[in-house]
Length: 331
Image (cartoon, rainbow, N blue to C red; front, side):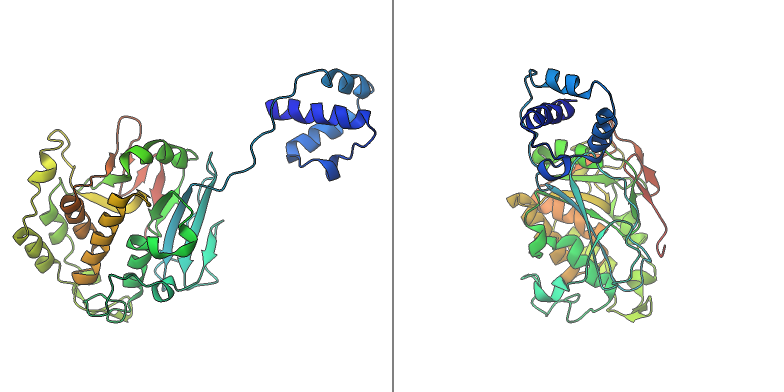
């Protein structure tokens, strides 16, 4: 309402000086233009305007500020046919899809086809590791750069918060950004628990024995064998234990394993930077199964995400939550 009072006050002053030109002098919301056109037909319009000259106008509304939050995804190859739809957010938010497909169904996303994984390669990738981009050119591996090493992408540096979405995720709640921004400056990371693992990393390893990781030719592309069992063994040898997380929240059955399809990061925080680097290093050194590497990175850096669901936000992370729907791959 303050906005409309402010506009009417300005118009009253301008009309008194005979310089009123609605289109040239004011940047108006479409709803306000419609309202003023209707008011102009009112026979007592001038009297109404006179009255508004004497009302104390509220201060000018602040100019639109650049968004502090950006949702990103990466669709390389033909793994997904579209960028999933999203609900317009109550706070200014950007949605950027990094892809090699200029003709992808956009659904409102900003499309960026710049190959940042080559032009701004992570310094962690020395080209000698199993999944270095020079050794594993599979598009599934390429997408991991955008998921875990997005801090290297120049256009993202102006955002405080980056929210990674797998290509299957459709944002369905208009207050998703608002919730994240209210939490992230204190919590630094926000993720959903993995509701099928009971906080047990070994269960995730066993569930990863399928062709995405065990085949050297998957989705019509060659890739190195992704040895999830050796990765787990190396972590145990390095001191990893599920008990680390269980002691934190003994009442939360699934705490300690997270689904990585929806993740929010306070990207400029030094602790977050260290975690992201360590997490991406797990992909480069071990496997593209980032849900195995993530709890290890959390434990080693002692940086634990704020874990959903909570008392306010509910849902089944692998299907549907208050924030999103998770679609099948390929749509």
